Length: 333
Image (cartoon, rainbow, N blue to C red; front, side):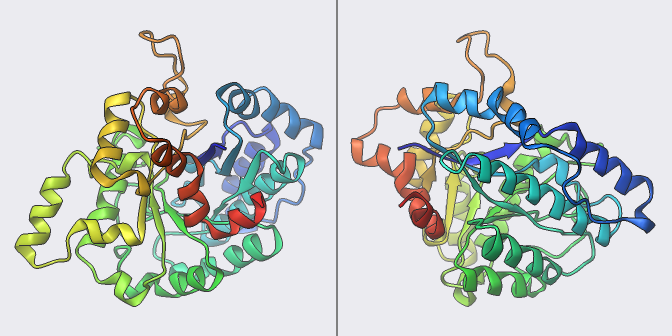
């Protein structure tokens, strides 16, 4: 069984984007979206020709499916706009999961907004987990989308949200959104900056002493982390911090790395027990690699090319995901 822990619904029917434009055009009069006038047939069409087609061709059995990361755009509108937008996006994920329960499992977007305490996300997290059957969430460490105006992930500002994550026994993928800072390209710089920054914040903190069962997933192969693992070991040694290896009790990385050497480096550095198969469909890697004729996000082909024991391959393909996402194990059976 192959579980993709990093899928995004980026091919949604036009009705969702029309609702977003309406929210931003008149944020003072924002209203919940309801069903957005989108039919089940429209949802099926948006998936059958896209994610489902590629999942089937690549032998991926199930994707953990969340709203478009770039589309979260937490800096836009108002706190109320962000709430209604998260509800609408999560509603679309729930519809996809309901139509294709064997192929998708839901992961939710949170209604974050710059300067607003993350405790405001608890209600939507509870709704998605307890009512819609979602098994995790995406946390944006920078709701300002490129300017990092909120406290770091290790600040007590975040603690009420972490308390709820622990209570619900669901993990969070630390995933930034778009970048409105012209210095940082969204997918080429801001994403990887966010991954690297999150790891460094965790390394310098004692967060997991306060929350020993809290679990984070750092996507995109961990940004710069595996390449500079020795640097982080050196920083920890010099500062008297616990070594980065000890973070792996609470932190996992996804294998969303678009070449064989990069993915192999990640696995060899942090160990197969801390890497989960991922594609990010659909995100950065839709282009066709002229060297192979395959999409860059065909990460299953990269994993097949790496010499691994069968035990390690099973860990990456599904066992780690079932451990990190306990509610997923109940869904899969």
